[in-house]
Amino acid sequence: AYMFLNGKLIERTKGKIDVEDRGFQFGDGIYEVIAVYGGRPFALSDHLDRLFESAKKIYMEIPYSKKELEDGIHRLLHVDKREHCYIYIQVSRGISPRNHIIPQRISGTVIIYLLDPIREKENWKRRGIKAAITEDIRWLRCDIKTTSLLGNVLVKQKAVEKQASEAILHREQRVTEGSSSNVWIVKDGLLRTHPADQFILNGITRKQILAISKQQRIPYVEQSFTVDELLGADEVFITSTTMEVTPVVEVDEVKINEGKPGLLTKKLQWLLEREIQ
Ligand code: PDD
Image (cartoon, rainbow, N blue to C red; front, side, top):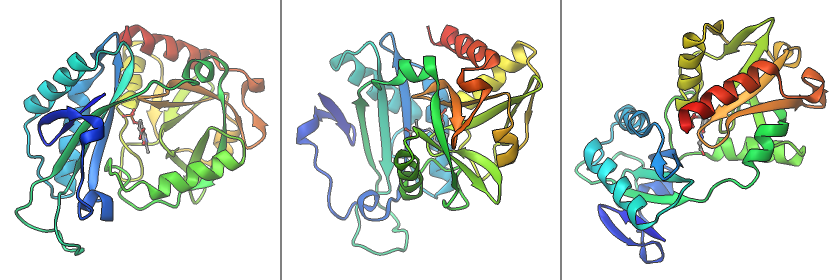
C-alpha cells in the first residue's frame, strides 16, 4: 500500500513523521474521510472545500492547492486500485519545538492514504443499529473537522460499553450529533436535524440528504430536538461518509419503530445509493 507524504508517493511503511509534529503532540490538525465507489471518489470537491474551510478556521495554510490534492488522490487511486475504500487525508500544522503558541512560517504535514471498507456496513444499513445517549463532552467548535478527537473517542467508548454502535450526543438534553455521524429524526412525516452551527460538523452526507429531501419534496427542518423527542420519534437514522444512511432501531433500550428501519429512512437510503452508483 502507498501513501502521499508531503507530495511524495511512497510505500506506506516507509512514511516517517517527526515526534514534534504538532498533529502528534497537540492534535493540531484537520482531516477528511472520502468514500470511493466503483474506483471513484464521491463528493471529492465538497470534502476538499471543507478541508480548506477547517484550515481557515484554525489559521492554518494548506501547502497545496485543491487541484494538487485532487491530482494526488487520483494518482494514489491509480497505484492502489480499489473498487471500494475510503481516502483519508490529514493536514497537521507541521513540525516545531513543543510550544502551545502557533508557530509562524512552518509548513503543514500532509498525508493521504486509503482506508479499508467497513465490514459491518451493509448489515448495519439493512438491519439498523443500536445507539446510546451520552452527554456531549466535546468543545464548542465541533464545526471544525479536527484530528483532536479525544472527546469523540471517549463517547464512542461509552456506547461500545453499552453494546451500542454509535453514541448520540446531547447538550443539556438537546441532541447535537453522533460521535462520528449526524443524527436525524422523523416525526409525523417531518424530517429533522440539528442546524449547521458550532455544535455539529456540517456533514457532506447531511448536505446531500437535505438536497435530496428538497428535490423530492420531503418536508424537513434544520432544528434541534430533545432527547425525549428522539426517544419518541417515528424513525431515527444517522448519516456519514462511512455509514451513509443507517437506521437507528434502538436508543438506550427504547425500540424505535418497533425495532425496524423506518420507511422514510429506507427511502432516503435508496435515494442516496442511487447518487453513489
Ligand atoms: N466522520 N459528525 C462527526 C462528528 C463526524 O466525525 C462525521 C464524519 C460526521 C458526518 O460527516 P460526513 O457526512 O461529511 O462524513 C458528522 C468521519 C466519517 C470519520 O471521522 O470517520
